[in-house]
Image (cartoon, rainbow, N blue to C red):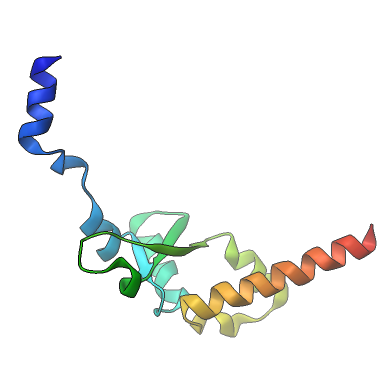
Length: 112
């Protein structure tokens, strides 16, 4: 396995390093809107989009995910008829989603 190891070391596995792509095209900053995340998912043909924090990611080139927005979240928006949340920042939306899911879970527990 000397040859494959040498090739990987010579390229320093740069081929697999997609940190810039994650921050620039495959994730949404947590201060952007849910609509922005949906546009990214549409353009990249994704069903989920990582929400990243530039403040936490720092200057070292990494990406720190603070949450995930999914196409499935549209179901919550439609069920609650709270369409204005699509204009929320990702941080605000994640808090809203947590509240809605918690309320729904409490309702299910009471029904049992």
